[in-house]
Length: 158
Image 1: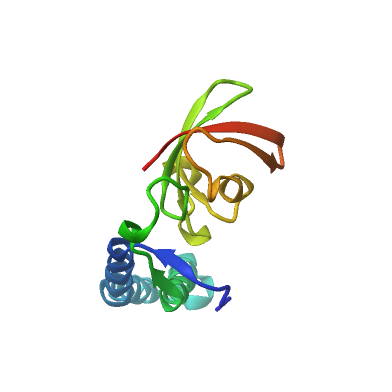
Image 2: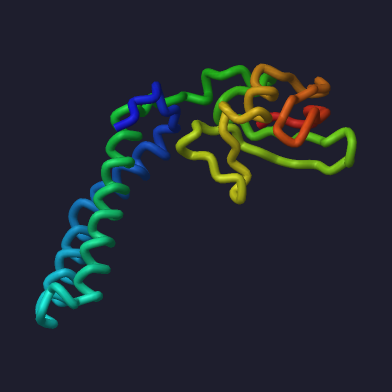
């Protein structure tokens, strides 16, 4: 698909994605085929909105499968036990304090494909992610982000 370098995953996450892909390819495809057949049974396909919706759903579903296959084809397993414990790296969970607002945030640094801001997972390629990589506890960091220059202090790394 896009072939943009490696996707760094833990072994657990890799197994999760493989299981999800297998489920989609078997039961997921069967379910969509069932819905298409059911919609087809409703008569004239040229005026059958249910059939059109099921076909569109099938296309989106196949796109999801392709994206998952692409991620898995580029996956590289990271063994976090071999990473330095005192330094921020991919898959580190970092507690930081915004020095302007004194608010404390906790983020896990992940590959772009796994980023989910609502779940506290930020990409290592994001401005904040890049700014935190290699930092140590107690270090103060200045990060240039779209919102302007931000100042953080690293409170904890796990």
